[in-house]
Length: 125
Length: 244
Image (cartoon, rainbow over all chains, first blue to last red; front, side, top):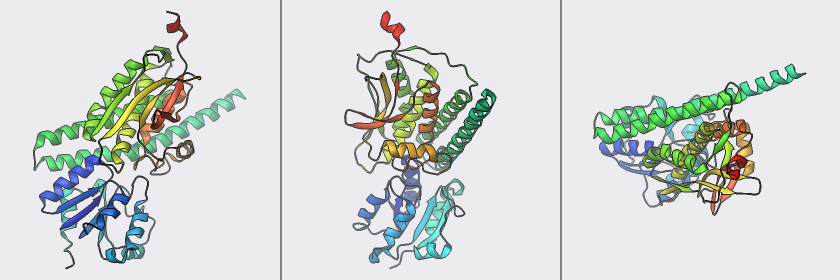
């Protein structure tokens, strides 16, 4: 699967890329929302993993921006963040509307669990 | 009246200590997640590089805890501040050395710019070293988070000014302003990302540094060094050294 990951921390980004590449996925990582948006045009991902705590941009704003492009509306999103599901002040219905299929809290998500969560999604043909 | 003032000051110090603790606790999840995931990956892959990464994350987290404890003790008046003449170049080199491993992990270069005409200053050596290192920690992460393909760079620098000797940490960063910095000082320990234009985490190192500089009767502010932006404090030159 082609994965797009938005992860501002370089050390974590390297770890996630190694783990997910070893699991057989093609991974592109971006530090911020702007670069990620620009890249989606060239390499449409099958799945997006996003940290909500981003420099300069709010991760939730990124989700709304992504959904404003009709051609990207069906790309599923996994939130993988230091902000846990209980802390995020958006409802489940809004998450669904934004295409969020799972919300993983980083401190409690092992690499194995992350790989399983990604593996649960099969790309839409 | 003095008792009331003292209890008000103590109350203020406790409140800022609590906020600093909140910001520290929030930040520490990052190096601890790095350590946990590195250990998990290390079981499957080349362990040496992974173990080095674990060591760096743990060392920087422990150093930040020590800097925080020093800042809190200073702020609560529990540590006697003995000022001495300090040659800044030694502080800059010591700080750069402490930041070396973390800079390498984040693919960042640490430079020093200390013109020989910068005068020695009157300060507290341990606090100054902790403050510049804590600042450097935040700036390394901030510089590495910039959307650029170039290697990130950080400069520990000093220069003379009319008010005294300016010492701080600088990088090619956008979005730093005094207004943003002032707002962040009200938000730290309450908001997740008080320095949202700088870094995506709590930026606790900046507030630890600010607390340490405050104990030395100066404050951090946004400053420029050549074409770089950063945070710096102004310190008084040491008259003692200048008489030698």
